[in-house]
Length: 396
Image 1 (cartoon, helix red, strand yellow):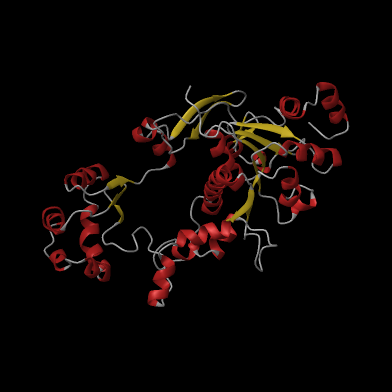
Image 2: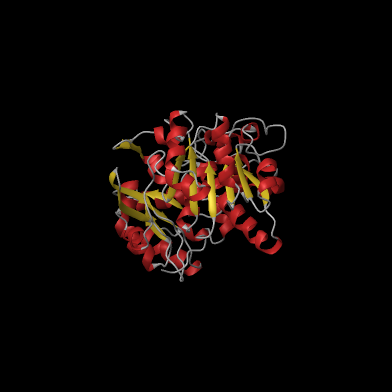
């Protein structure tokens, strides 16, 4: 088997809920040894979510693949000592506890890096680690509102709408992976570790992208555009005879003229030859094309747009995506057999390398499944001691 890019990297994962577990399961997918530290008897919070299959939540199954679970009570002195010991030879620590929690546990960067100067310490927070709001807890829905993305999401002229997925968490998780890989590369050059942090708030603000300079240039706050794009007309999801179709007029003026006259049957559309004219006259254009789009099925319009060489596609639901031939061809959806939960379907990863194939080694672990294995392998703690620690409530 080809070498995996992170197979020599050990990650101690103190995260829970979404942003942290999302990022560390990507590291596991790339070959890292990810040791997830969880609370005895309860486990990480994502284990409690519904729905469940054979006692395993969908969120836990999705976010904790290719990890080992070690159940340690960090409220005990011995539990904190064991956790500290596990980090001594680790490459990466990831945490997304409330601000200050890791320091209070004696597991902050300053403490751990004294014994492990090469440690990469990744911290994910709601608002970040400095500034007037650093002390506050931040969760995705609040961050979507405060970070501005909700102000540009939703129906045109309507109330603000949350983005369907928790993009603050997902974004922070992805930035966290980028930060870890960057810090590991720097360590190769300098031999030194470091701490870095990212946040849900900052991730969402970065997703505003061109909206920020756009506001500075115009002095006007961007608003929601509903199902259409904010810079091109027509570039939208439009209703058809049997559903919806998304399309983008990627061709030149000849294609626009052909679309207008041959398929829409409107000479009036030829008045709007420039992008600027189309943006200014969206309502007039929509009045011409929308009634005609409703006369044909989504498949019929997709054939037409293919003929025009315009990007297009249907509005799919999750069930459609799972069965999508392209998603299956590239393993963007993975059907697998979990050791206890049975047959499950999970998202894949859009990473394809010529030298290796990202692994799916094992499903999300049961709580404390690897406690004995990890403590013996990393710390030399034998079964006699782990049994005693269980009796004391330190382990599960």
